[in-house]
Length: 179
Image 1 (cartoon, rainbow, N blue to C red):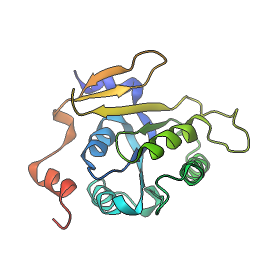
Image 2: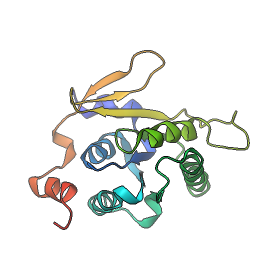
Image 3: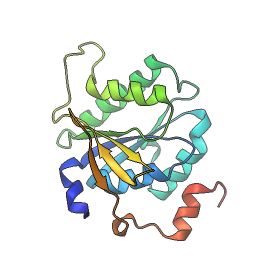
Image 4: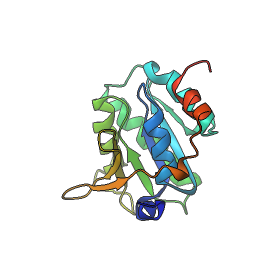
């Protein structure tokens, strides 16, 4: 499967939930972002080091970081911080309005509440929705596919190896602290 099959699912702004293994987030960023798109790393105090490694590899600034501190299970804080980031993004990038969430990493609570935040980005009016609708995805390590959420069954897309720009050195830098 070629990267052109990912085109309909690419977004301008992609939230990535950071767990202990940042490699799936790297893959999602490379495959699901439009040219010039930005990833936003959502992480807790327990996953700050993997987030920092990924920040360096993807050449991100502090503005693309969404720290949860020790609130990785706090529904209110997770939704609040993601909604604040969405509001900020919409203010500074009014013409780049497609959003996505790859919920492979992070805690179960992070996945559930980040998903809710993108479905309802305004806590004062829960009927407000992003337009276009956000793209939700999950990297299934067993099948080596990215699953794109749909109303019915997810769309499985094979992960192509070529466009990932993943050398052995970069793989080690993503995975190993202090390299």
